[in-house]
Image (cartoon, rainbow, N blue to C red):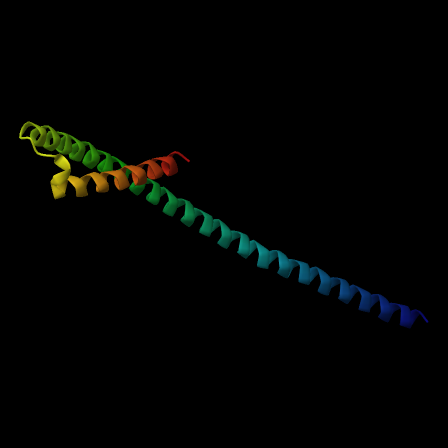
Length: 116
């Protein structure tokens, strides 16, 4: 009878060791996943930072362009009126005004995203 108990105890010990080894395998597997997730987060943050810098540069350049173009449009409008010409009859003036509307709308959207 004691021989049977010794064999059963040994069997139980082996099963226990298998379970413990399985847990260690799981820990190693999920530790690797955690390390990989950390790397991905760092890469994403770096990419996001790069995009944010690019957005700020685009915002600055677009604002400068908008300011210059608006001054030019104002000058053309004043000059055209002095000559008795309707500024809207100048095709470049009409096109530029429409482009300015779209650029202004997109610039506002970009500025909001930068501030988020």
